[in-house]
Length: 267
Image (cartoon, rainbow, N blue to C red):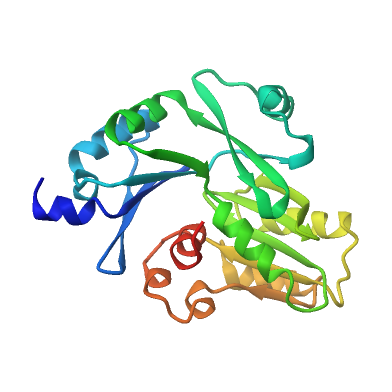
């Protein structure tokens, strides 16, 4: 093992897998190194990963741990209703069943919930063959924990909207539990506004006093906020750079907000 490999072996590699792409990150001398890997749409995500293993320098080092953050459709189940033996029954009651995928789950103890999500069987095989000590988690785990803590600030009820990978996740918390959680595919900001306001109405939130927090890869951010301001008086855009005191990881171009939280706050 070379000196560089000895240093790298103390680190954790983070692989983020989404419906839109792959990214790889780790830390070197206290700074986050991030690579956004462009996918070839003509081949599977597993085949893309195989090619990345051959071409990406960050993957050529030795790591003690590999954390795989999987951004795929999530079924959120209250902990007291979850039975691992029935996870397929739960999940495929809500989502279409697909071949060649495994169901995994992340226990969200602080939220009394379990997030069930699918992973490509081939991708899992590629990663477990390439690395030791591979752990799979729902990609938004650090974000859910962080925003639940934010929920304790102030007196008003809060609704959150997180934009990523051409989806918007809309959720709300009450007493360390999810009050609402759903994910919506969007083609633009107008779709997102429709879904956010529909959830706002469903939860009976006050347009005068309650708060809507929006973050992530927001399409046409200024226009979206201006439209929302017509219906909800307290709309806030979360800027990771300002939120985390200009932490260097928050300034990396195009890095997902959930990944920023992972490096700033942990899992």
